Length: 454
Image 1 (tube, rainbow, N blue to C red):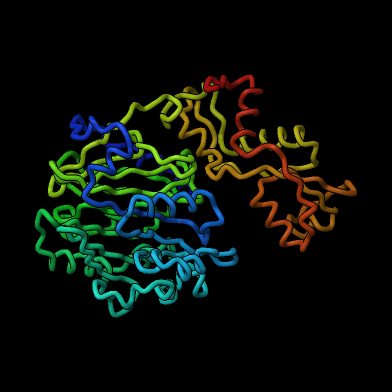
Image 2: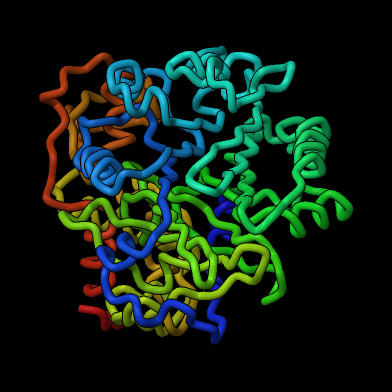
């Protein structure tokens, strides 16, 4: 987990190249009107569909803009959850015919025995007509495919690879056969200025180009226009290879389970001409209206050319994830911060103990918004619940002296306790706090922290 957050923070170096070929675009409607066509990319909905407003808005906007198709980057189902997405795909004729899913660990687990059950995830394909589409060819194993999608005078080449989170051994999760398949397909394409090549894999750490050997990487960098990954639930633009001719590599975020500062959203891709390029934006579906995005949530890839930043609108201070929000006079280790937050929660919510799972501490000096949110990246709600000492001991093997132990914890842990003890849901009491609001209140109360971002 710590490794993943380190990768996330390091990868948040967004392309800031000088070239701004679309600086005169001032609205999303203007971009739509000048586009030859558009398509969408979404991921990590974990079974959610029209039951969530973010998904409902995405579905509405995709259809309003007459998107040609949707690419899904995996984790579209979740074992033990309601999984409205299954019925949605069966009942919505447009999605049934125009959805191109990429498999991930969520599909493995949902249809098989575990997240590493590679042979089972491909059952997700049965929720669409993708196996009957003449433009799609599957591998013999059946978890990967190559789709040639004809749109106007263009052909979108989608190479769907299978690289789930599990197993942890990446050579097993993303085997040589998958890498060879990628290169074989790329070598079979005679690319012209009317071909758009997309390579997609869910990935284990949210970025997978560095898993390719140099020879295979060189071929990928030379031919692919758009590299897609997911799993971190944060939209990111990667520009690890400078301003030369390279793919635009992005992480597709999450429509209903965003992480850190990223809102729930999806990727809109517009093809424009003069110059011919794909304009990529992460559309914030937490907002009621679809809007043009700032440079942190957009980028432009010239076909057969370089990746450039999309400076569509001014980046306001409140939208800058690198803005300084606090100053600390000393360092707080993860363990110390956790202990202090436990005490704070017990006092604030009048409970006997607290179970708070922060993921990092605070370094001395300036604290930016990314560091602040990465302490509690999931932004869980804070709840309280009551258990008797025997119940508490059965889960936590701790000795208690009070007749009833009141606990402060996050909603996720609270649900675990309810399930483990087979307790009635009325035992769990909601508060007006989530983890980030709780952290802010704690920081404002501390003598060693100056919070400056109100």
